[in-house]
Image (cartoon, rainbow, N blue to C red; front, top):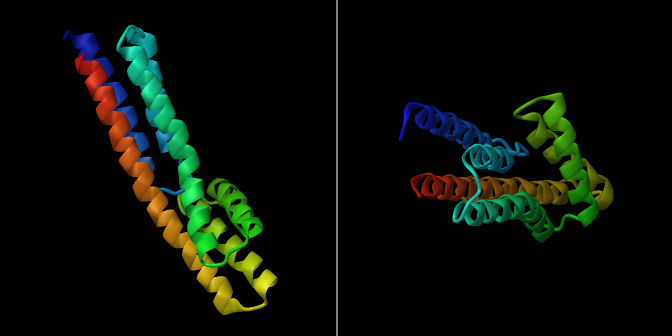
Length: 163
């Protein structure tokens, strides 16, 4: 491996690690950033076999992980009695909150939207807190899920580099 390949690998790995650490922040597209790192690597080094196969697997993991985290959050909140409308509102306000207050705004926006929507719907603050707690627990599990998938993606990229 020459110097330029080593520098490329280090830059791509650092990009992927930023994506991985970003996964600890709800609503941060860390899996997409890891995937973009792999895409850049593929565009620079080529997509011959088995590279295209590994990149295809990374793409499926990225898409699945990006969809599954919302499902996990919503499912956990729904188990606690939250309506699907409240869950959709929580996700929307989570996205908006991320832009208003980076890092914590997404989580705060989602939690606040869930509580208010459920409080209005149920007219009972304890039930609203239960639904909100479900969303928070689901968010925690979603972070664990995405982080695990991010590690798998980076390991697969490492296999790609070694091949």
